[in-house]
Image 1 (cartoon, helix red, strand yellow):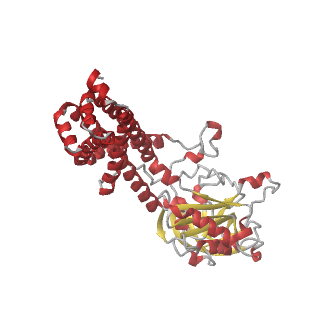
Image 2: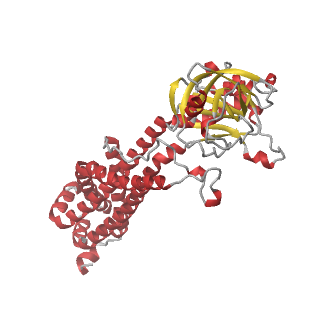
Image 3: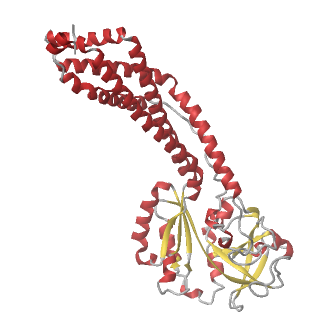
Length: 459
């Protein structure tokens, strides 16, 4: 009788041991499938989050320059160089900004109720921006454009402004009206047209933590227009910060390499930092359940292999007389080991087939419940964050401003589990490996069998 037929008869004759082995393999298969499916579902969700959010790379001063004898003078880079970086293939959109003191002239006044002349009478912040729609406050929805339009790169060299609605109301301004500004030297003046009016929800009396002015008095203007108010504008437009929105978060490395190639030494004193905070905030719960599922998968695999090895070892002891008779009849020891391995493989194949019927639904339910708890905890943590008091950095109160949640980047709380033939192939390979490993343990005992001793002494 060949070993294949013997394997089938052995499994049928020892139904109890077969069912225990089958149950062990079903548990291993389900846990392995669950780990694989959760890993794939979370990876897909992460990719979707990255593509939906994109990637933001910020060009800013290298903080180490403050300790390298550079003094307090922040470095500047030619706007033309930044434009070249903005035209790299990895970039979807880009903007840059500069700020300086601007003084209202021609009878215009600051909004009522704000800090008293933090930048001198009529003085406020004139923020020159290439594209105001890319400002974080507008992208997140914190600022709302009420009327008019955003400033774009096409407006770069014109004289246009976005003003806050309270400043517009104070001076009776609407879209298309003109307002006169003086530069920091209070001598150079220019007339600007109001291109748009926006709303900043912060109270008038709360000073901006960075500039100390009332939020109602912040002016956003074209970079070229506001630059003409500077006494050194003939030297060419130079900026201190820039933001690049990439097509894909995975393109950060390629963008950095391209930026260094295009800009060269012009990047000295600057860093190119990826601001993927929104992606991290959204995918935090996914990483947690992925690590949990992977750990459970490995623990169950190791425990299952140990149980199967024990069952195989017991089978060798229980079947010593059977093996002795077969060996005495001329059967090779290798065939006995092959029969034992075949029995394991047959049970594993049935177990994988059974697990494929319900593993996906079970994983979807369990994974969704686990993710819901993790996402809920992440949401509560984000909701508990409180901004520092106006005029304070928050460090003295133990508040890190960098921990501020990103708006419109809620933690992902749903995944979609899908079983594919490739997943079954992976589980099959894992099950086969565990089965063969479990068979290899007692193989040594089979090789040491002596048919004469077994048949004459019963051991």
